[in-house]
Structures are given as structure tokens and as C-alpha cells.
Image (cartoon, rainbow over all chains, first blue to last red; front, side):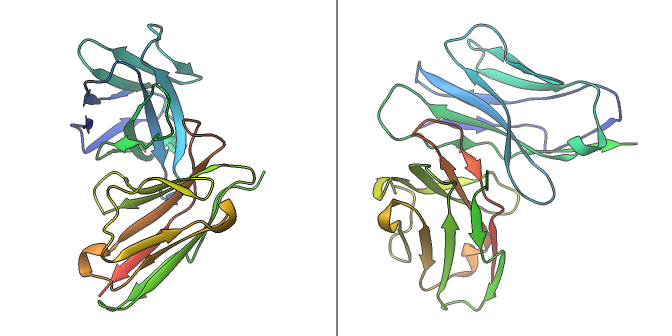
Length: 117
Length: 113
């Protein structure tokens, strides 16, 4: 079974600054995907960024980037130029790859990020 | 394109009562998921459908929870009878194909008194 651990229950950052959210995971799978999801106060979960485990290059989406350290089983999210709209709960999630049809997401407990003006 | 729709958005019931939640996935999405999100925790998968067949229901408490996806489109999740520990947000998600990006609905917040 896979586990996902987010060790920072809450974080805060000043607007325009950079913040990094941490995530570690445990799995015996060799083929998998990692995700960061954002859940704003309205509770609609949206995908922020996705990383395929077989790719060495870290994924980037505009102001969001990840630091994927496969050997260390670490997957952190960096948010640059933080904006007030980035205030949300952020979840790290794991999905097994490799074919078949079972593609459930296993989530961490989340990190509540507050961006202060 | 319309997103995943869920209703009701909020529900308050007494323990031992029954409740049902409805989900309408994005049009054309073959895979549908129900997650349970207890306060302070990440979502946990309850059941995954591929079209109208069940792929994974290993974490569904089958003595009280049931789910169906008739005709491979809409889905309902039912709890009968509800317990206090069922208080949570129930999230529905869908993806075009298994393994594709999952799009989440707004959720149904259930409070069991």
C-alpha cells in the first residue's frame, strides 16, 4: 500500500514571495504519478501539477514547480510570486501507473497555505 | 464545458437515517470516483466505476454504503443507516479515461447528528 505524508499542516507566506510545500511518499511501485491538488475555501479540488515518475525533469506550470527526488521519495511544490488567490489547502497525491484500470489517488493530509497581503 | 455536478451541497441528518448523494460527471467521462474527505484529512477513495462496472470498492463499508452508476453516466452513493463517523465531505470525480486527469465536483457536506 502507498502512503503520502505532508509534514506541514499550515504555512503562511507574504504576497509576491516564494514558498515550498513538502511531501514524502512510500511505495514499492516503480511506475507511478505524483500530483499536487489545490482546494480553495469553496472546496472544489483542482489539479495544480503532475509528475510522471519515469521523467527526470521536474514539472513546471507557470508559477508552480516541483522538486522530484525519486530516490528520497520526496515531491515538494514551489510556488513563486505568491498571490492572494493561492490561499488554499494543498494536497499531495500518488497514483499507481502501469496499466489496468485501477487508478485511485492516495492523498496526504494536506497543507493549509495562507498568502498574506 | 460543464464540470462535475453534485447534489445536494449540504445535508444534515440524524444517526440511523438514510441519505443519498448524486453525481453527474463531465460528459463523455468513462471513469467515476467517489471519495470521502473527513475534516482534517485528505480524500479517501470509496469506489471507482469504469463505465457502469465497479473497478475498486475495497474501502467502501458495504454494510451501510452502496453505490451505483446506471447506464454509465450519473451515479448515486447511499448510506443506510448513517453513523456519526460518516460526517464528511463526499467528493465525486471523473476522468475521460482510467488514469487520466481527475476532475472534482464541489462535494456534498454531510453532517450526522
